[in-house]
Length: 475
Image 1: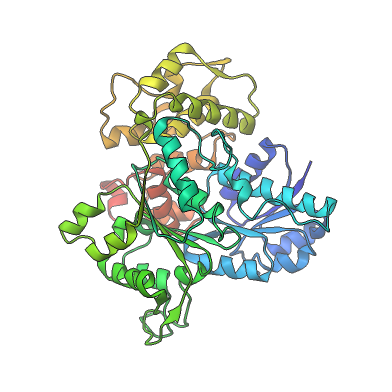
Image 2: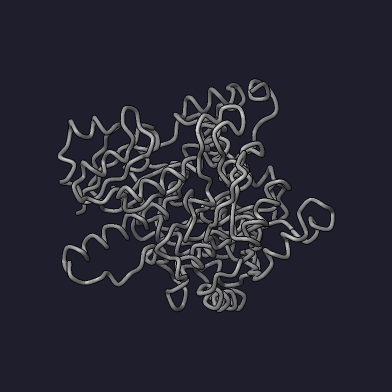
């Protein structure tokens, strides 16, 4: 059983990550800082170290020297992705951006441990899998793309991905929220010649408009109030690799002009600088909005739209994928059962009927959450339609109804603390929904042990709206 050390100062994240790894047959030890890890353990004795980048006392990169060859996986937030890339140059085996989902973490851990074992068993041979290749563990027909489904629309998508991946062409991925646009971006990167270089993922909607240009393109010292030193941007961090801009329709017009220069000239200019520098970046963009319509109304640059629209990939909504929905549901069920140590769970006939006929306005993301909730609450071998929390007679749900259906802790257990087996996402949803009426955003963030920006990002990712009344409205 591989032995993994978690070094993370946020108690909620550390505990949730420990439970996730233990449910997947890993032996886990934990520490809240580099100093605590040194005092309690022999660090080189672990098979893998998973560490936050920013820790009290010393940064997580200090563990790279102390590990003496043991791989170190760095966890970081969007705001510090540049530092994460720097940590890889210092010797970290990889990085993972917060907030991460369970699959992303488990795939990264499995890949790193597998590569380490390959090096141990055959040190003179080159590992057969390229960096990031095992991230595409899949259930589709050829096992290459990393996305589940075999309906005609998805088979056509797989064909386009294989054709487009080897090129450096810009790709625009279109589809509703929750359809898996980032999975397509990862497949394009992992099957490209850039697979060994970084894939930098940026949610344009998660970065405040006043910071987006600095985050993407960097800034010089003194470029604005608080810019006490020059910093590279995320475009520079992706140099040699792939930049994935999710929700690109939310990008301000000024930042769009800078991005157009990257595509036209292959160069960037930091905020406050008069010097340009060359970058070699492949751009993949995604949106659920109609960019062509936005361009006609002046909300999106028309010249940028045509630059992005070199190759367009359309992801169908889950309701348009026929029998794929059951295949995906069964895959999620098997994964959740393995993670939670539940054996022999299956869908009852009414649950399968509900899964097939429900409209799934939240697409794959809603399906995954519904199944995770059902596995947690199920007390018999059969999962009923009631446990899935969906009503096939109410397909045309309003947004607020959908958000409520995504929050089981509010509807089923609002008076109690979540059980230890709930995921980090469920814990977060439960805490925010229960306390946001009488706590400010600052208080919520402090109680959760995260920053206000991180709280905002997770609200966006999990679809939790802010309440506009009471104490929360004054924050």
